[in-house]
Length: 298
Image (cartoon, rainbow, N blue to C red; front, side):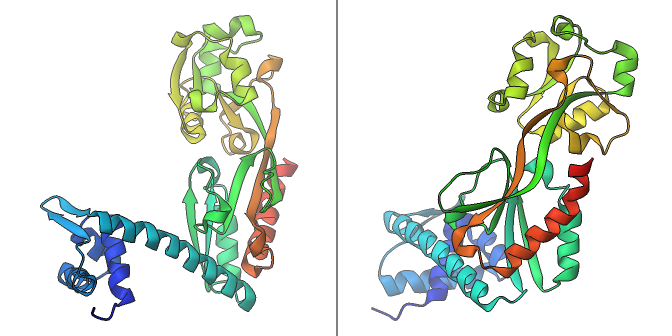
C-alpha cells in the first residue's frame, strides 16, 4: 500500500461535503484538477473507490460513507484540541465561534465590534440560528440562548439580559383601527403571529387561543419577520421590549392586560465547562454585558 497523505483525506472529506469537485475546489481555493489529483492518489493508495462519478456530482460509495463519518468525528476532536490548546496559551488570537438566536444577532453587533477593537487578532465566526447547537459538539465556543436558564450538566450559563415581551402595533395602524381593550375585541384586528413552532411559549399561546384563523393574517417561524411586519403597519404582533425601543413608531398595547409586558426568560451566555478558563470567552462575556446593560435598564 502506498503511503497515505492526510491532505488527501482532507480534500476527499471536502468533496464529500460539497458534492462536487468545483464546489470543493472553491472552498479549498485551488483548481479542480488539484482536487481530482488528491482524490485519485487517495483511492490508489487505499485501493478503494470512495466516490462514484456522475455528471451531477460525486456520490459516496459505502467506503466513502465510512470515511466521511470517521473524519467528521476527527474534525470535532481536532476543533476541541485547538480550543484546549488556545485556552492554555491564553492569547487573544485565533477565532471564537458564537451562535445566537436570529432575532438577537443584529443587537449584538456593537458588542462584537468593541470586542474586535480591543482584541484585533481575534476573528469572530457568528452563526445565527434558532436551533440549539450542543456545546459538546465542538462546533461552537459560545451559544447565546434565549429562554429559561439552561441546566445541562456540562454547560456553564451566565446571565446577559432579561427578556420581556409585549404586543405592539404601529401608530398608523392604531390611528386607523384603534387597539383592543379586552379579549373579546381581538378578532376585530389583524394579528401577526409566530407559527406553531412558537405556540408553546405561554405569552403567545394565551393570545392565540382567542384568535380566529382568518384574523391571523401573517405568520412566520422567525420573530425577526414578525417584528418587520409590525413595524410596517400590517397589524398587531409580539416583540421584545428591547427590540421595540428601536422603533419610535411602535405603540405598546397596554389597555388589555393579556397583551402587556411579560418576562419570558433571559439571554444566556453558555459554554462548555472545559472552556471556563478560556480568556477570549471570559472577555467576550464582559463586553456583551457592558453593551446590553443599558437595554436592561430601559
